[in-house]
Length: 507
Image 1: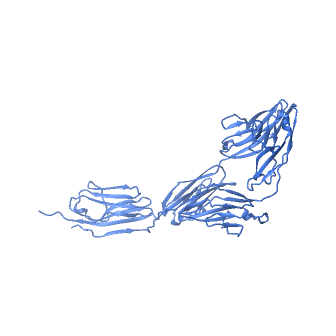
Image 2 (image 1 turned 180 degrees about the vertical axis):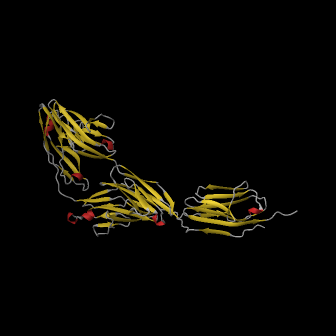
Image 3 (image 1 turned 90 degrees about the vertical axis):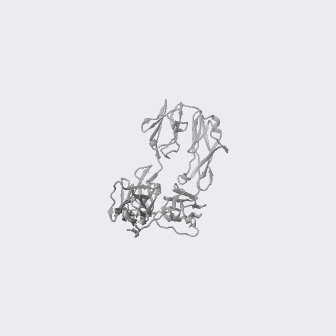
């Protein structure tokens, strides 16, 4: 009688597998600058989070973890960084005008945010003013709100007044996107009023009212064009609307023509000449260049020359998007960047910068390829690609999960007691990364496939390899120890059992 003698399960390398049910993510990946008034202070949430809950920490750009300064700076348990209000005498560059970043860490790894520049704006006295203007009747007048350069970046012109009555843009009065007041088709009565601008501080909310200015109206007289409003430099992000001002006085009324990079401009759906200049909708990087506004009449010419620089927002994308591999394998990541040239690219693992080494290569013109050989279990985690250009930065990250991919027997054939001529099917269900190769032996000799011995396999939806050895007509010579061996680059596992059975009964 055939009988099962022994069943052996043996693994030749340490088996270690871990399924991670954790994640890390950014809740505000675009946060790169926080400007606040010294009189109000600010709260800056860490833009990173994760599941399960993460440990959040803040650092200076130098990598030094920040500490609480009572009454000045504090990190709350939920990871929010608070800078308290302070008097000008307590201003400290290290705290109030510095670059920070935060990290989020949980069992799936550790990610760091983009650099966040935190800057306090001190409250300082300032005044805004308007100068008297001259214009010919029927021509144009331009009033500008003159703001001190020390606070210009924080001040917005919110309105203009004519004798204390707020002006609304209409057929003859126009407030431009830069805050200038245009008076079109000037009339004698326009010289009877006082004009002033009202501004607001973006961070303190304080408003200022300028002095009153007058418009002196004269009769038309033949004259060459004189530039009233123009530009030297304009910057815009791709997709924004930008206005290039160009306005001149003169009699007769001047004519205008625009050139870009010395080529006459042709109107299209995105470019439109307006009473204030040239309006460009949905800007593109290709719109960058030198713009010339030529102005002329019968008595002379004038021109405005300026440059427009349109920047595409930085974007980094790592591929592949999901990485699940085995210990000892090679992992390759690639980071593609759009938005600028000559950027600085860096790779990070779990918040720490990666440098080339014996098993780490960083290749490509911009260091965009990360190749790692012989991955250890500790090499798993969050991998990030950072790109930086001037004050812009961007990042992307992927989770690299490393399993000990040694093959494991999930299920296998059991002892069989069969009679001669009876069909037998033996099965081995194996899991491993990369997919294992399965071979069969009988008494340590390879199975020879013939008409009655067939081997087949399938790969299940779970990623297991299932191999079948089918014997259609069992003979006495088919008795013995059957072994299935699963092998991949991470190791080998085998399963074996003896199959015996009854001999055919005599007459």
